[in-house]
Length: 218
Image (tube, rainbow, N blue to C red; front, side, top):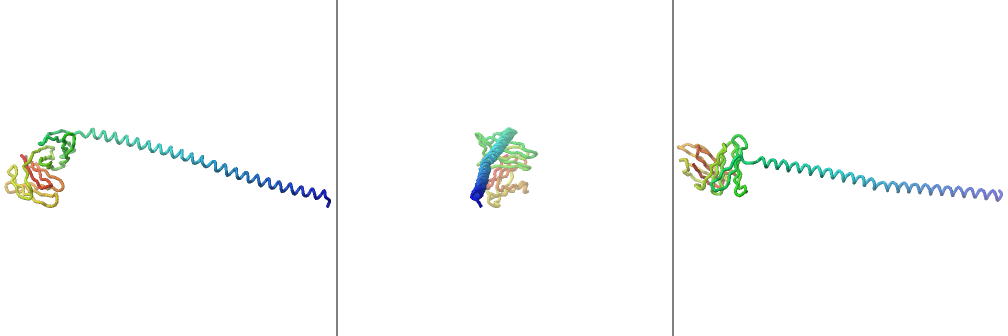
């Protein structure tokens, strides 16, 4: 083989190797660019997601605010509607606000200087309250009677207003029972169990309290 032939063969091999190196380098460069582009696109997607989340959060907050405003409006309307049907002055100078809630169903709020001191209801039966020595009866017809003093402390048998006799026994803690006796017969039985009891006994008003006090007025 001549020296010229050998030289041509070497040059062709050198060119092939160089071309292969260039192709490999180009492939590596393209791969790096693709990875870089993919990585660059990820923050944009995250930003879009964050923007969507932020937008969703704002909408939820607005919805809650609207709901709250509606609730306040309803509460205000309910307060305006809850005005008493009438008021009366009680024996100690406080005010009784009487609300008619239904058939034989009344509520009494005892108010003094804007403060509600007590609330109780007569629902299908009379109700009573021992307000620190002032006694109040609210009948199931909505009538209110109040008086001061005249109490007897249970247990025992006592002569009370209206020529009645009250036989009061202690049943348990804050639980007293009174038999109201007239002409030798038990006319009514009162039970104060966890709350005071009241009775309209044909125009004689009686309160039995959870502390065992009984008082009557006519």
